Image (cartoon, rainbow, N blue to C red; front, top):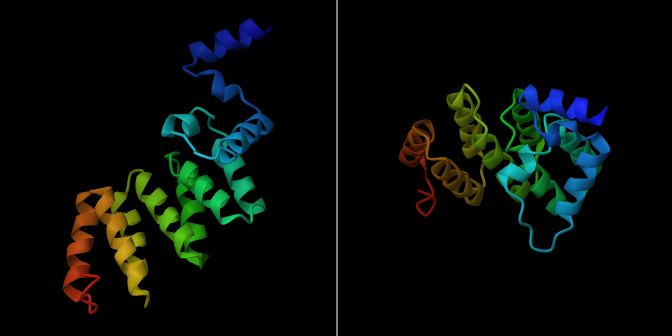
Length: 167
């Protein structure tokens, strides 16, 4: 039975990870979060399979730890799906913690999907906030992405920035 399922999964182009249950995905993520010196990679997150973003979303709603939430959003950012992008956008809209917001925006730019311009425009809106430290941090996030859209956004914002050290 198992060999038949394995053969079907492999012939369909799927690996072992896509056969993980939600509980197994959660267990592996929790083991990563418990590491003192985390070593997770994009491959770790992606190998959890296509249902991992849903499990990560559940874990995000249950977690109160800023550290855990940062790590979970970083992981969610490695899944290039509309559901992942929407979850990140939704969280960023109401985020009050600057570290979490920066992680969410960085993760969003990592998964631009078919419309990197929309994601850059979404991130750029946060540069309208009053906090100059936040504006500087978002400028760095846009620069890190390196996309032409992000670099254009930085150029536009530099021209209108009123705080000298931010520009």
